[in-house]
Image (cartoon, rainbow, N blue to C red; front, side):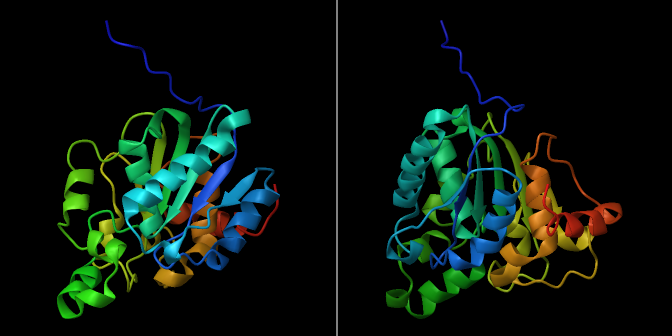
Length: 237
């Protein structure tokens, strides 16, 4: 007889864990973290060792440990992964038991299907392309295994966002996930020209993240939502 799996409740808000991208710079996430905190949520930004350039599977284990501590007194948690942090979050979800305990997963410009820049870096100067860099190359063994089967394991609701002006994740559409609510920023606000490194500070991105981790289910936003989402980034709940 199959053991019944219990998933995190969608109608109860818990803490929020934010995972940085390649390079491990947490300062770029401070505005996003503050806005979520201002909305009344408990937020932790994870500080990863080795500038988040080490093995992504090791990073996933560290996410698992941080998530377990955060949700110890909560029914669930929401997780936001920026850039490569979104890939590490997916590894935690798929391979390290994260899915049943997570309410929402949001990824921001994550190279889910690799980036040409990582492959180029490894081909040109392999000694300057650390483990995570190699793993983020298109068709790497890690990404091939991660993307086999269901890209979005059951349990949490998923939302992914990316910009057509991404100069780090190439092609930018690598940020899309099957069975996730996928949002290209320019289809919401046509004048958005934000590039990769500034995405966590973009009012549209912050508005989309807030909407994705609220009580309502993530929905595909359109031009009619542009100003409302931007304004929500600056307005306390």
